[in-house]
Image (cartoon, rainbow, N blue to C red; front, side, top):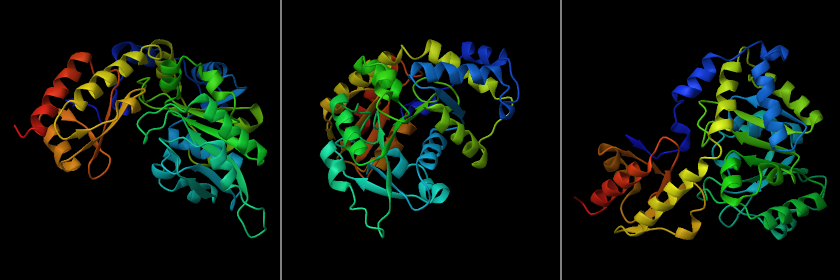
Length: 340
C-alpha cells in the first residue's frame, strides 16, 4: 500500500528500533528518565526556549498550552480551520473550560488587522481574551507556511491587546526546512510552542511543549492531571532523538515528492489544484467526482488518500513513500479518474 493519508503513518525503521532498544530509562514521573531529559533539553535548545516537556500527542501539547494560558471562562483566539478547533475533540472546553473565538483566515493565515477587529471591549459580561493560537505549517490549508512578516504582525497585534501567544508547530520542522528559517526563529515570537515527532520526523509517538521554565513547570502538573504522566518512557524518547538527529534534514525529499505529485495531479482530468499552495508535504486538491468514492477506488488499487470534503482530497508525502511510488500513485489516480 502506498499510504498518502498522513505523515503519521510512518513506521520506525531498523536504526530507530535499535535506538529504542538500547535506550537508558528511568521513572519519568520522578524526572529520572535520562533519555527523556536529554530529548527535552535538545528540543528546548533547538527552539531557543528555557524548557520542554515530552507528552504523548500533539493534542495534549496544545491543550496543556491552553490550560496554562487560560482560566475557565477565558477565550482563545484562533484561525477557524486550525487543528485546535477541528481535530482535538472539543478538548479546550472539556479540559480548560475555555471559549474559542474563531477568525476566518486566508490559507490559515491571520493578519494583525484580523486580530485587532476581534479584540473585545472588556465589558465584564464578555469572556476575557487571554491567548492567540496560530498554526505553522497549517494542516487544513494544505501544509502552508505562515509568512514570517504576517506572523509577527499577528503576534504584535495580540501583544497590543495583552494576549499571550501559542504556536501549534506540529510540522514546524517542515516550515523550517522549506523556508530556511530556523525553528528557533519561528518560535521566538511565542510564549509556548508545540512540536510533533510522529509526523514528518517518523517517530512512533510523541510531542513536546516548549516555553519558559515557569510555564513548563505548570504544564508538567497539568500533564499529570490530564493522564499524561509516563514512566520508563525513554524508549519512546530515544525514537524522538533518533528522528531529530537523522530525519529532520531529509524533509526536503518529502517536499520534492509532494511537488512532483501535485504537478502530476494538476494534469489529470477532473482535478483542480493550485500549485502555488503546495509549499511542504501536504497537497489539497478538488475532484469533480465524489471524494469518498474516488478514495475508495484508489485504495482498492493500492493507494490510500484522505477525503477532506465532498470533493476535496488530501495527499501527504513522508519518508515511507519513495519517488518511484509517487509515480505509481499518479498512474493509479489517472486510471481511476478516467474510469479505467
